[in-house]
Amino acid sequence: MAKELRRLPDLTNVTAVAKIAYLALNATNPEVKEAFELMIKGGTPDPKEFSYAVPNYNTELQVLYWLACQNELKRDDTLALAVAMVNGLWVTMGNEQIRQAVHNDTNALLRFGRETSDWQRGARLRYNLEDYPLEAKVAWAWTGSGSAKWGVPKPLRDYVSIRPSTEAYELNTVSPDGLSAIREYVLSKDLEKASVLDTVDSIETFAWSKLRAVSYPYEKDPQGYVFNDNADYLFHLLMSVLQTETSEVETRHQLGTAEIETPKLGETSWTRILASREDSRNLGASLSDSSRGPAAPRVAA
Image 1: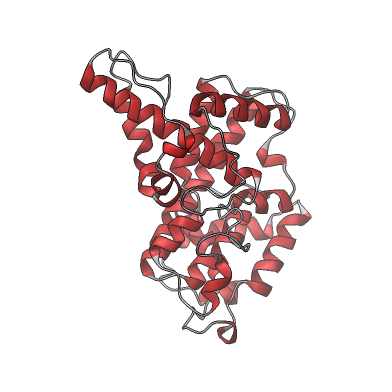
Image 2: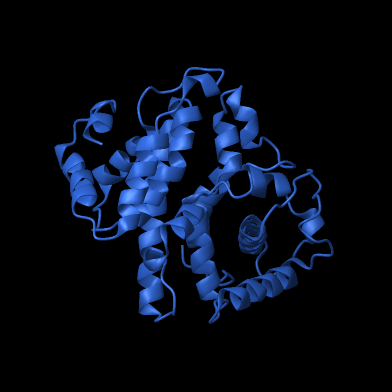
């Protein structure tokens, strides 16, 4: 591992290196050793697998180093390891803009995970993200959802031969800011239940009642997007509600107390919801600004 670390560019933060060494050498959970073995074995890209130049260093360790520069690493911190393991791929394939975005997004995602775990512990739930096995944390940390599959725009399989653009990265991943906004919204509406399945059912019932939708989102929407799994589907469903409520509040502020009818799903701007991470990044600020008015939804940014 020391040999792999020395190959990283700009390895100047001694404290971050010490955190990684502590994590590796003081582990009591065998999954930590498993994670490091997987990172060392598969974290350095094979140039023969790509049609363009890729880094000659371990991109998964690069992400872990970025995390260690801005966060404390706990003993047996498999959550941080999972975030690094799955996001090294974007450092491998991306240009400098994407790598900077990965740097920012992975740090935000780890903070989001820590906050989620703290909330779960405070709510005395039977489950906690920090206690999940490594395999489950890897699935949680991958924000690309079903983007590796057929049937979605710009699937990952296309980027073996063509380097992804920044737009492709944004379309294929979920913004941590968007996840934070949705978490606060779900909590503000009391949609969380005792079990995961009951929570999903609660979210679906609430969202469709708000959108008055008549079509099912696993089918193609007007832009031809196909939802491939429940996580992707629920995220965009709730983003639709948030965008709609934010738009309603802004319109009510302009028109006073006029009643604004909630648009149906087919009338919602799917291109904006699906393709623009800038919307989800700015969503918290937008909701915070609108909450100053009397007609604002009960959303904590």
